[in-house]
Length: 270
Image (cartoon, rainbow, N blue to C red; front, side, top):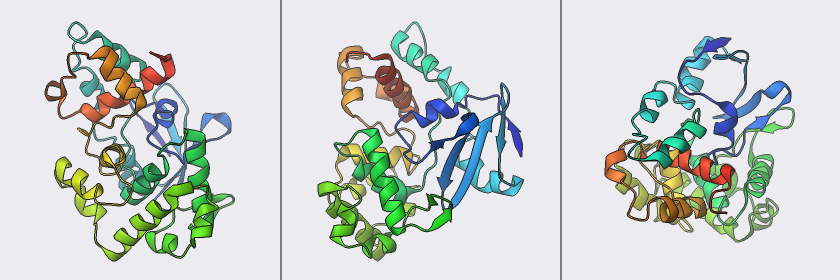
């Protein structure tokens, strides 16, 4: 099917924004995306036209929510006053088209546990190995993200074979907590962000940065504001007097993505 989108929507920028690790760019510029056991191929066919290999029902029930297409990002971007905050205005203009994906909370949790002290290619490799080890084959060379129960069936050696390093015990502990119900990730989606962060940080190996990433990218708390090395540079160099969180609420997570992509790709303060 084909859709037409006049709001901000850029596949390449979203793929580079550091929030998703299993998008694969294929020939012709289309992307293969795996979400909740479904495989989508989507590519641009015109200025505002995109082709998806799914039914209309699948688009409305699964993929439209996944891409957060009911949120108007253009209006959110236009809230920035170029006179009051020229840096954020420039960052938003550069990163226009990035959207906060509504990813599966369990996959997001494990992915960002794995992400600690790893670069993006290494993160992607580890996640791919984990999916091959415990996920279900969906098509040729394509696997679902494993359930917590499937992860628990893997031995320490098998988890180590996924290049997890010391993180294997954190992944195993997260799988145990979700499988036994001591943490309900879906129940955290409507919870206040502060409560969600506190619950997530009860998990072994989950600190404030990982919890904030899960909050933003897995629970879709779009005011969450993860701070990594790039965002530390942003705050130190661009907002020495303090970043105006309250003024930009409730969209700080979206603005964070603009700043993150802009700083990383423009080589700011490298």
